[in-house]
Length: 365
Image 1 (cartoon, rainbow, N blue to C red):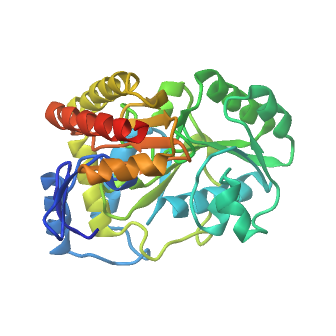
Image 2 (cartoon, rainbow, N blue to C red):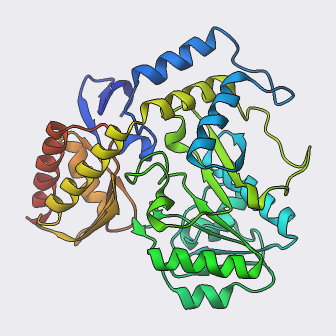
């Protein structure tokens, strides 16, 4: 399948067939394909300057930092090109700021494909084939407070988690677990990092996924929806944890790229309260409807990051949906993930539900 064009929630392939996109580039196109405001901002920036290196600041980078600062006040920012780069920066920052190399992450988590980010990814199938990776990394089960408390000792400088484990089966972190993590890290002198790469920029119904958890992290990694398809990542550092990096400690040739930052700045403008409300409403509608479909064991998630645990393999369900014109993705052996653009409308949700129900029925025969 070769994508020829796309608009809103729809993909058109080279053979002319159209697909309703409930994958959104793996939770990237939060505002849909070719969003006019984002496209205009990027195109206009191309006529000004599209690269200047990190020897200089540029206006779109300043604008984006200002707008992110309104979302996460009292903070500083480092811009890069992807989520895995944001997590690499996060690992390096925590090591230098605390003087400790120990890291605690969650089982079934996913933080990226480079060696550092993969070292803290709690999925052995992805990690073990590249061993040995970073040492001094421990994994604990999601929402197990006592296991977390036992793992965080005076060698640990970083605890990292996703508000919802998007790649590991769409498992939300409990409020009690997040608050315990905040208490444990603060008492231990460790940094608490929240990976918002898949959950952030409205995906769960609030700008940051951690807003539901009622905690303020020290470090936040972002990417995916931040550029709505333009490659950009970011590390956010709360002022109370600032000072870990000095000049020259970390850098990125393309970080803070003017075109990517212009697009991301436009994303923040277009991500209105109405869009977030639609995300919440459509997510609840999808979860409620799918829970009654044959072959579904359970449904979980937040906003428009939804995991459907099936009695059958996810890969066959994804293929059956695609044959009928609906793009979905798998998030585990038996979990189908829905992550449509946050602008998805009632008609598109109805169409997706009709296709999904038909696909799942076909697997029962």
